[in-house]
Length: 345
Image (cartoon, rainbow, N blue to C red; front, side):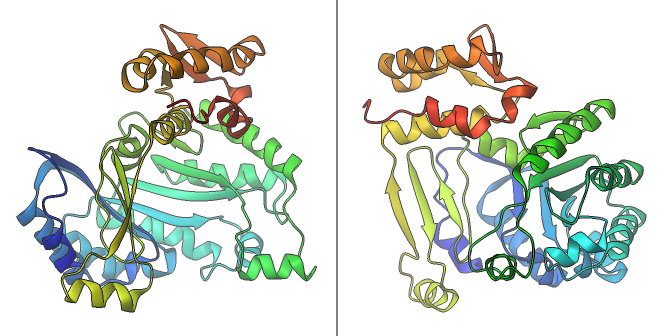
């Protein structure tokens, strides 16, 4: 990965200032602090990094011991954690085949705060058959009581080739219920509003000044460079994805060969991606930007397709900026599909 950083140091054009560094994808918290620091030092050597850069480490609760957290605090500039809590209830964690238990989930947050990390984000999952609405409210209240400034809350999705998918297929466990997910999403939005969190993206809620810089830049279409096996990059016109196989990735890098594939985005691709990412956020879709960046035909298409969702109050418009209402957020994917363009280039 250090070598790949060297190889791709010209990825950003001009005087780009790095606003965020994100250690994610898999379980980066298995890395010792000295290896994390080596990567950060190399990034500073090769790129211009903002002195206020957000530097996040994704972590599982069972990896965040007091000693590990103290070493990160002392030896690295990590200033934010994204912790895969998923639930504060053991029945949910067992259903999802998580390695940690509920007490570990609470303790790792308290320990991180004790060590001096206040900028925390946690993941919570709703819609599990093991959790009723009252238990979902308990999960949220636990997060509020722990003073977590940022929460990412996702409906349970069953990924192929996982233990959970296998158990559902063999009828050893129950599949998620869609109606329950919608109910719990509504509970989530109401609870967050009462606690004065900003619902700034479909799945993300934050106190003022605690929006995730890294994710916000994704949603705004700002270029990013991904390092490591299976990492993805984007420069505004092309997508790149690294070889997923560790051994082949390492061999390619050692031989100074290209370890990624490239896709050049069409105008349709770029428009669809803009719609898909922006509709999910409080920043909304800017119809004027559609006309400027993609052309008149996309603007006309968008204005025509959005009419239905304005009339049924799933979308609101203010000065050519279109955002979802709370009712519309439930149907976000459906709305997005209708707004997509096919062969308008």
